[in-house]
Image (cartoon, rainbow, N blue to C red; front, side):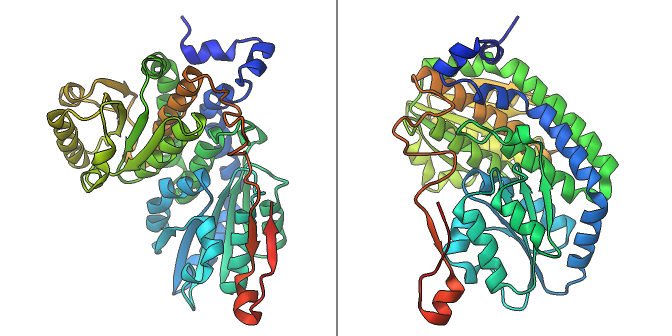
Length: 405
C-alpha cells in the first residue's frame, strides 16, 4: 500500500511537470540515501580534515563562525553545539547576510577564526561576500566550505586559498526545486560527521539509526501529514530545543516558502514561546512540537503542551519524536514517532516532517511546490543583491561592489 508521498513519485513525467512536482517529492524521498553517501565522502577526506583541524586547535585564541543564508544558516544552528564541544572553542552562528553588512562585529581582533560556510549552490552574493569579507577583516582566517555544487563560486574561491577545505556533496543533493530539502539535511549530516571525525565508528552507528528513523518517517508520516494539510490551517508554529531549534527554524521556512506565504509561520523554544510568541497561536494554528528523548528536557516540553491544552490554543498539536510515552500522546492531537536516535543528532529527521508539511500544504492550496512563487518573489538563488567591500569603505569611503546577482 502506497502513501501520499509515494503516489507523487510514480506520477507520469507530464503530470509531475504540470503540477510542479518533478523535483521536490523526489528530493525529500532520497534523503536517507544522500546521508549515507555524504558520510562516505566525509570519511574519504578524513586525513585532510585531521590536518586542517589540528592546525586550528593549536591556536590559543580562536573562534568558530558558522554561516549561510536562509536554510543554509539553519544548518549551522543544527550543529553549532557539536563544533563547540568537538573543538573546545567558542562557536556562533552568524548569517552571511549579517556578515556582509556588519563583518567587523563577527571577527574578534587577534583571534584565529574558522569560518564554516554552508551553501547549496555557493553562488549567492552573500556567500561570496561573507568569504571575501572574512579574508579582508580576519587575517588569521580558515575556511571550511560545505556545499552541494563543486563548480560554485564559493567552492572555487576556497580551493584557491591555502589552508581551506571544501567538502562537496553528491550532485543529487544540489536540489533543483525551490526549497532546500536534501541539500539542507545532507549538509547537516556532513557537519555532524566532521564534528565526530575522531569517533568515526561511533558516528557510523548514530547515522545508521538516523537513516532508519528517516525511513520510518517517510513511510509512516505522509498519510497523517497529508490529511492535516488537506483539513487546513493558516498558521504554523514550530517548537524545538537544543539542536532541534535549528529544525524548528528550518521547518517554519519550508512550510512558509512552499505555500508562498499563505501559511505564516514562526518558531521558538518550548520555554521561550511563553514570552510573547504564544500570542500567535490561534484557533487555526498547527503547533509542531519536536520532542526531545532526554527526560529532563522533555519535562519542559510536557509542561508547555499541558499549558496549550489548558488554554485551548491551536487547532492541532502535532508531537514529533522518539520514545513517546502515553503522557505525550494524551497532550497531542497527533504524533509522528520514529525509532530512537541521539537527541543531539535528531534534527535532520525532524526536518523531514517540516518538508512534508510544506509539500502537502502547498499542493492543497493549489501551488506548484517546485516553484510556488508564480510572481517570482522568491527564487532558488536570490536576485538583486549587491555586496560591498566593508574594508574599502572604512579605508577610502567608497562603495566597491565585490559580489552581486
